Image (tube, rainbow, N blue to C red; front, side):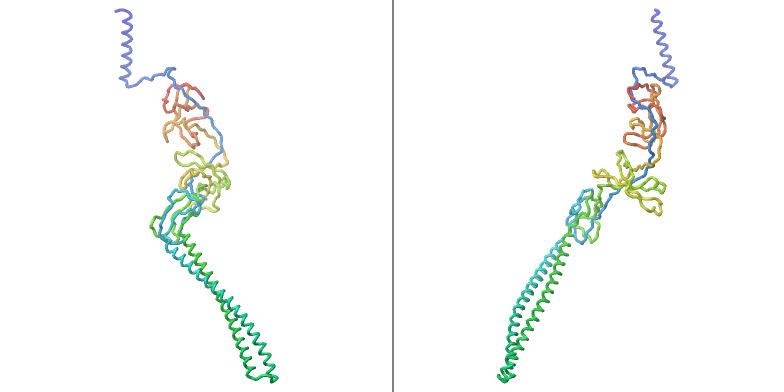
Length: 405
């Protein structure tokens, strides 16, 4: 055997012995990654930042204004013109009731009004006629009076017979009676005019009432907003005052929180607050503290505080929960990282730290999440260089090369 073959044989035996030893011992030898296989990553140096301290409160959202859809008249529902979630405007028709009987009442009231107006016209004509008649009776009376006065003077002088004087006296009395009758007729006609005017007024009021009733068979939205709480169906008979639904004005939303007496030192009307919804929606909404109850709840001893948030785009919905943050006026030191630096899952988060070119895993606890950043409460310290790319594919003790910081 040549010297070269002897060397090769010795090397093969040595390799077999090493592999066999590792196999029997159950331990895998750690492989050192060569520089050619290093993972390229970006890192960020950890810095502790001083910022304004914030207090967090659980919040529920409610409409800034709510109007009940109720009916002023009872009746059978013939049309339902809305659904929950539908946007409506003030005065828009939502429900219609059967108005057959009301239409009949309107027609009857119109007939009564027409009759009263006709009777008024007749009474006015009667007054005019009686006044013309009285003018004639007045003329006849004045003529009879002159004739009576003349014949009385002649009779007193013995110039005419008694029968002629008595005839003039009778004519005067008849003229007085006719004049009095004409005057009474005028007064009666004038009283009839007042009666018919009262009848017209009563008929007009009744007609207006029936028109209002007819209008109320169409039930409209009391305010503009979004429909909710639908409580009506086709064919249903509804009594007066039934709540058929609700209209919620959500152009502005109130975030309602409960605060303690000790919180009132920094929570003030007109102050700023930030809302973030529960769940995956990380968007923040800016609001203004609108009002704080003057008296605490008798049982919970907390104050209800409402924060107005503009909602013209309709993103926020009543009944949803979230968190409101309000600055306390104090300061705190904190560390934050981009959310992409986190690995793992909730309750078991970790980051990788660049330890002289090697990725070292460190378990961390998280705090508040703001947009694309997350607060790190423990697991890293100021000055650490945290890897912020390729986190999901990195392995513990894997060699890395930093391409950007």
